[in-house]
Structure formats: structure tokens, C-alpha cells
Amino acid sequence: MFQLSFQLNVRVIFSLLSLLLSIFSNIVLAQEDGVKKNTILTLVPEYKDQIVANFNPYSTSSMPTTHEFIFEPMIIFNTRQNNQPEYRLATNYKLDNDLSGISFTLREGVQWSDGHPFTVDDVLFSFSLVQKFPALDSHGINKWIKSVNKKSANEIYIKLNKPNALIAFTLVLLPIVPQHQWELIADPLRYANPTPIGTGPFTSIESLNQSGYLQCKNRFYWQAEQRHIDCLRYPKVINNDDFISRIMTGEFDWTGSFIPDIERNYASFSPHFKYWLPPASTISLFFNFKAADPELQALISHVEFRRAISMSIRRQFLIDIAAFGQGEVSHLASGMSQDFEQWEDPLSNEKYQQYMRYTPLLAKKLLDELHVRDGNNDGWRDLPSGKALELTILTPNGWSDFDTTALLLADMLQEVGIKVSTLQVDFREFNERLSAGDYTAALTNYPQGPTPYKYFDSAFNSVYQAPQYPRYAKHFYKNTKIDELLAQFPIASTPEKRQAIIYDLNNIVASKQITVPLYNTVQFFQYNTQRFTGWFNEENPKASPLVWPQAPERLLHVLALKPVAMESVDIKAAP
Image (cartoon, rainbow, N blue to C red; front, side):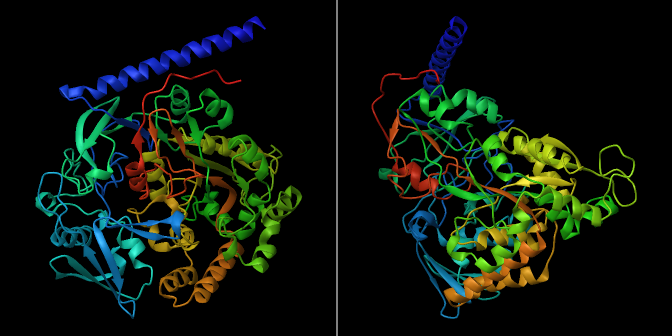
């Protein structure tokens, strides 16, 4: 009893000391450069090993407060309100009747943060920039654009290469940058943009060092009366362990990371510590279809091998241990999020569901039929040639739920005789190795869109296997029928036709078991009500609450927040 009491007291003292340190840190930041800031919102959208003054919205290494907060989009489509358009730099858009072009009407009276007027020429320039430098085109915009022209003093017209009813959702993801600054940049991909000029609410980088940075108000912001926060503070957080040890102190206001046993390790520490976990997309295991070893590549290409892996996995156990119960077992072999129940094809789902169940005897039978057997009686299965078979599962270092999932998968596959090791690398290297095909297996989650199309497109469209695109399709599996269906979806003229295309995509991906879906996770969102009010949550679901980089609705969220009077510290030890 004494030892337990002592441990709890130490934990309380540690928490209080950490809180005092974080408050002191905020005060120091708040008065930096002799300018007192009344309200500073501390947010953790992403982990970073280093803080670098990189605010280039086209760079994959930019700081996580670059998009939306510095570079405001033309339109935000509100996923919590049936994709209702929330107009920002644009005030309207209109598709041609034949869906072959789209026009955007731009907001008048907007200024860049250096006082220059925002004009249609800035938008024209931004589209021409990604056409001139395709490596900047991380959203696949170029493949749709035939031409971009000024229609009037505040209107831009984009002619498409082919009809697309959903093109607005893609085009508004392009960062709009000031022509008067960026036309002088010789190499926009490598340009760090340390002193950014933007149209967003927070554009002034007032302090930056290896402990974090302070990003403050744009005094020319067009909607300044809707902004009630002076500065955003981004503290360097290097991994999930670092994050968990600090969030319990009350240092952070707005975060979006995995917390094991969130009630005990977070919510129980203070009545101000809140969270909301909306359903999200799937976490999957995928293989490298162009693995360097030809024999391993040939094995991975067999659907029976991928099915054997799938049937060797106890998915609920992964959720219970790695995700601390925060998730739902995947029952769709295609990996489509179970959040899209209305898009499911019951017949296809039932046909392939058997491969999503834990049936190790059938898994062993499939491996035997592939001549993947233990030829030297060392307890491990070998490749058909007799060479040792070993898989390595790659995960981003510090993503504790991913890292634990990989370790559990290694144990599960050991039960059917497959030797698996795990490798954690920092997120930059993780992306680079996937793009280079320098891996055998990896874990990933997938983006969640308004329909299942975004998942299937990002995960299985072969065009996204080029280096400039995100990690999701870097399994390098190619299927021309899938590519054709993905091209047809945006131009489908009726909901029934779009439904049929999703049915076909679901059926093909499931039948080929291209990836091995594990479980549907949740969208991580934590918030601290001690200093701010107006949070989006289950009772106030005005828009997505996520703080993650390039989650456009986070701009709506930050503008909805207002400061509250400081309340007394109410932190306690977890039970």
C-alpha cells in the first residue's frame, strides 16, 4: 500500500511540475520579442524530429501548420455537413453542363500577409507552377487540366482533359501562393519559404528553434473579426511516447494522436481533458509487388499467399492490444471502410469474408500448396527453392499502435511458420523507402473521403505509384481494370452508376486480396477546454475536428475557438 501510494504521489508531483513548466514555457513564448500575445493555442498535428523553417506548401517536409493556417484554400468541403462548400478564397464555383470545365469566382478585397492584393493572377500562377514543375503536384491535378484561363477580373476558368463531376474536390487542394514572391523562386520544390506570405489567419513566424515555433496573426486577414486567437504554438514532439508523457500535464490544447487506454491515461487526469473518436478508415498490411528478390516477388504475386497471411491474423486481438480496444475488426477483404455500409455489395462481401477470418489450418494448407514449407526442420517455412523466407514489416518510428501491431503480426505469423521481423524508421525514411520499393511489407492507414472513391483511388490507382505521391499505393500492384473504373467514377452521371462502380472496385480488390486489411481505426482527436471553448465534438459536429496536416476543416475549427478565463489547475493521477 505504501509503495502504491508513493508511486501515485510521485506521479501527481511530476504532473504538477510538468504543468508548471508548460505554463512557464507558454509565458516565455507569449512575451517573445517584447510582444505580449493574449491567446496562444498549442497544437500537435504531427511529430517532428527536427524543427526547420520550412513553410513551403508543396514540400512533403513542410511544418505541419503550413496548409490552411498560412495558405487558405479556395473552398473547404465540409464532410460533416454532406460536403457542403465553405467558401474561402472563392465565393462560388460552377461546372459546365457537359462537365468538361469549371469556373471559380474569387473573393474580392483579400490581401496577402505583406499587404499585396490577392488576385486571379495568383491563382493562375499557382496552377501554372504545378504544370511547370510536376514534382509539386502531390494531388494529381495536372492529369485533369487542359488549360487555365482568366475569365474576368475575379473569375478563373479551367478546361478539363475529360469530364469530371467531382473535380472541384481535387482542384481546391492546390495551395494558392503569391505570384509576386514565387515567380522569383528558381527551384520551388527545394525552396524552404522560411518567411511565408499567405492569405490564411496565421502567417507570421515570430520565433523558431529546436523546441518549437510560434506562428502568429496575419494582420491583413480578410476575416480577422472571426479570429479570436493570437498565435499558434507548435512544440516539437518526437514520437507517441513523448506525446503521451506531455499531454497529461495540460501543455497541449488541440491534438490528434493515439493514446492507449485513453480514459485512464488522459481523460481521468482532468475534467478539461476531452476527446472524440469518430470512425476512420482501415489499417492494412501490404506487400511490395516489386520486391528486390525475384523469388519473394513471385511469392507475393500469388493471391493464395496473401490470403494465407490474412487467415493467420487474429484481428480482434490486434485491436485489444495495439489499439486498446479503439477500433473495429475489418470484415471487408477490399479494405473499404465499414463506415460506408450503404456502398457495400453484400454478395461480394460474403464471398470473400472467409479469407478475413482466423483460420490457421487453411492458411497452412495454402502455404503448403505453394511449396512454402519447412525444408530443413528449423521451424520456419522456406521459399520453394529452399532459400529462407523472411519478411520485414516496416512502420514509422513512434507510431506506437502501428509498431505494436507489427510486433503482434510477427508473433501470429510465427504460428504458421513464417519468420517475420519488424523495422521502425522515422516517418521521412518510411515514405522514402516505400517510394523506392525498399521494403518487403509495411503497415499503412488510408485517407477517408466523402465516398469510398477516395480510398480506392489513393490506394489502388497505379498513377499514384510515382515518387511525388503519398505512400498509399506504393505496393506497386497494377490492374488496368481498376484504373479504368477509377477514371469512370468522376464522370458517372447518376448515383446508381457510381454505386455500380464501387461494387466492381470492391469485388476486384477483394478477389485479388491486394492488401490485407486488419482493422478500422478511429480518427484521433483530443482537446483541452481549460483555455478555449467552441470545440467541434459529438455535441457540436459542425465540421471534422481533426488537427492533422492538410485536413482542410481545421481552418473552420480554429476560427470557431474562443479563449476562456483561466481556471484553477485540476490535474490528478490516473486511477
